[in-house]
Length: 413
Ligand SMILES: [Zn+2]
Image (cartoon, rainbow, N blue to C red):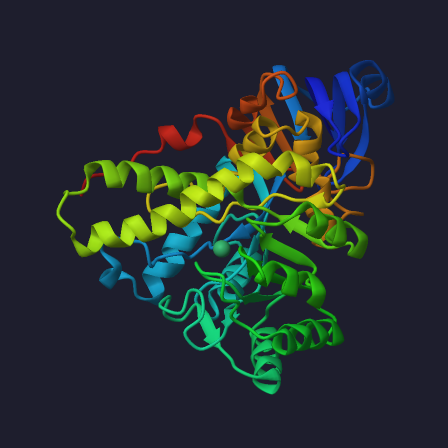
């Protein structure tokens, strides 16, 4: 038995905070008690005590929108054979732990990659957050993401959509993902195809998510009833209310839109004034991402107030950036009007419920898995404290401690 003491524990349910608190963790990696330091110490006088002065303990963060093996953005893309992609993914998983992320949902990647990662994790070849995945994303022929070789499965018409879904489940998918909007108002799948996808996925006992950024694809996705709607960048208040009524969850992934808009702004500043193909591409894409950023800024608070359940996802696709900045997505939610404790809930309890694991993780209470994030400072006073990761536990096992990665040295030969 171990007791971890901190200045406070944030339970993760959007309400409870215990000051001068402690959590008790047994040898199986489960929480047996959460309370004040006094209560906990008197209950378990024999336990080892570890103090985190000046720190806050909260549940490990959950990222519902990750592409863990996203290799298509690499400048030396030709080097990425299957082995290199697996190594990249393993490194990304390790990085996710260092950012306090203990559970991930991968929402489209190379065929079979996540199944391999899950096997490697079980064999203890890699240290990794808990992993859920969709295997490949399902798109119409030429739909969103089609150039991402191996990561997308093209399907057209209800029966082919059903076949594609069955293939993903055969490949070990826990979820199904469809993409149905790109950068224009033209929706990609028909309503019939979307309805069929939800029907087939639920019929086979799995949940489903959908990439829908623009109108009318967002409305079509809501009507079809996907369990989570990814992005929904230009969603209206009326649609958020519909989602709340239907119990559908919104995963806005704002951080990626803000990052790409920023990238485009900088790239445009430095792009040559001549009308090069790159410049044209950025102008085209940049306009979409800047409009997206504006929409989130203007609408997030209004959409939040409808009561639609919101959960965290990050969707990082720019090369060189941390793969799972859930803390940054939470900080953005706070910047746009959400209370810090509610934004933390979006990354803990809400996300755990999306995964059907609200009874095992996402909050800190007796009988739950000891996925713990220890941060320096108090994120309720300053949300960026979530980025000061001190230590991370996955089912009671320390999987990251601050400074350890920095101390690793790589021989030059
Ligand atoms: Zn994505």
